[in-house]
Image (cartoon, rainbow over all chains, first blue to last red; front, side):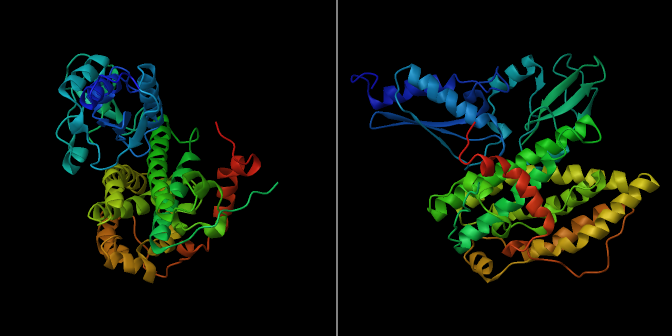
Length: 167
Length: 258
């Protein structure tokens, strides 16, 4: 184990910080902590257990994220960490942190708008362009480059952009 | 070379989970067949995305079924090592893609059902099912919106698109009744608060369908004779062909991994 002098609480804190630095392979500016995908880190008998939750049922990034967490922890001396997937409560875009939203915008992806709900799912009217800030935008495709995004276009600066769907 | 099919202890809950998982897997596979062939790039992405959602739902349901069954099976064995007669999906979802209108009508009939189904399932007493439902219902809602818009566009489009959409509705209609069918084993799970009473969803489903179809200037058939069999493993000839493609790698190279 890492060191016998650290308490479980210290180990847990260190393991959390390591896991929290893992980024989403599809949106590398966001960490899994920013996204709210990282749910829980626990230490049981000196072994780290990490719980993550998928954004979409079929999100292909989940296997990659689990592998990255495993590798990051192993590199820092946490041997054989256990990574498990939890489905409940179901992830929502509300769990993306404020910092995460800012990073998304800077990366060129419009962050999800209102609090997630069935109304929000269907009610998105105006998404501001992450490039120029204009509200003069239009939906190109309900489904984008990954499960969690839709494709929009700005009619002011003419740039296409991804919108992180409210979910 | 032959690979043995797996044996399954079909307790009521395992059977129930396999029925839902098979619906999602088979429809997801059908949608994946469009990849690279859709009429426009946006639709190619949409169909692949929806197929991926369905595959994700199937994986969660299979994994849960494997856990409940505790018989050494897993999601891959359920998908790759069962023959046609062991599949429990609706006849509707195995019907061939046909043209784009036919794919959209099939998607519309199923999504309108799945949307109601998963939303109701969120109240299941089974925490795992409720959790799977909470993810799936948001995805189904998107699928329903997407296909509804296409039904209207095709029906209220040209004479050609109207005729194709109407033809697909007429042909696929007889497969819709099976969605609302349940047997005694499923009924017992409904009584226990675990499963959803599919029969109770027929009226709200019909309302959704009717609204969209009439906006699309299309009509629903008046003939209500319904075909069923998929839930007990009696399938149309199409499923065998689909499985031969879906399972070809594992049947040819048993246990192959990436």
